Image 1 (spheres, one colour):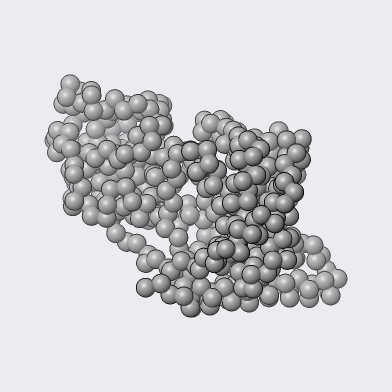
Image 2 (cartoon, each protein chain N blue to C red):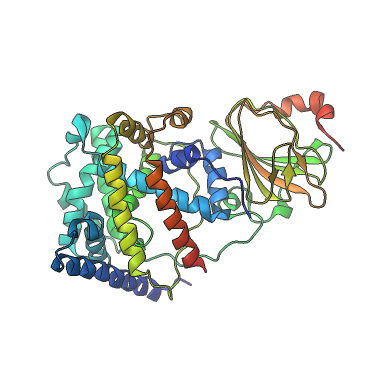
Length: 220
Length: 216
């Protein structure tokens, strides 16, 4: 049962298509696991549809007439190509890594090339645009999530296991939204190792600072 | 293997549902009740797009083109595209509308919403914006016919949402529009409070019920 969802702001920006790639990945991965946010996204897309339908309003819009001959040119193009049939239904995914994430890291979590961060914690940086950073984190059961400080907006989406802080528990599919004001010490629950997708829009200080700062932040 | 029978089958089911929508609208007109509300603009676009999907109907496509192509062009220009590029991309979007008409599901989106998603994706390519991975699509299977009341309800809600946005105070409406034109940062979106949240929330509840119904 997912209890921590995406914010309206994030869903609206994802619908508008204005988020950095790393955040798009986190939003898409959460929606792959969360019917409620899928339905909310459909509603934000509907807002986009209403905005599109109003786009001729105002001075800037009313100048956007199509060129004469645009319809004829478009009809000429569509005559040359057959309509695209409906794509076959894909199976509903219950795999550990949802489809949007598989496109980036492959389908098999056992084949991920982790990089040790100390204390059993491992990470894999996911290549995305430079506007934000995405990584997978592997936190052994019972260990603390490494604290790298929240310099900007950060999303942490749980894929396996769970972590808790003073305020709440985050299990599979839950997304924690943290910003500069967030002060907490999340710890992976005992029992199952925790795998998370974490994205942040601030420069990633985590790796460089880790050798010096690692010790106080790990409960092993 | 690609199943070629399924798309036609689904498209016919969508057509059947759309026909029922139209029939219901006509019944309503005969009843002299509020036809404008019960079979609104959104339902009319559904009929036209279905004709494109099933019969490659160029008259229906022309009507869709004349309404949506300039709106897509204006949307792209307001998003920062220059005139010539917006013109070319608006034509691209309308070609995609033709080619993918059979994939449109009137129980999940209005035609305007569906074209918005095509235009948004084209804009991301055109302006070389950040890549935007998407969750896998949960298509309804071949045995699941879109329920006529789902289709009617969704299209009516779309008209109501459009009316709700149109009736917002101008300042709030402009903020929403700027967010979709890519003209607001994430933090600026967070600060703006102009969303007609009541309208959206009731819509979300209904969308969620439909989604769960279709997956059950």
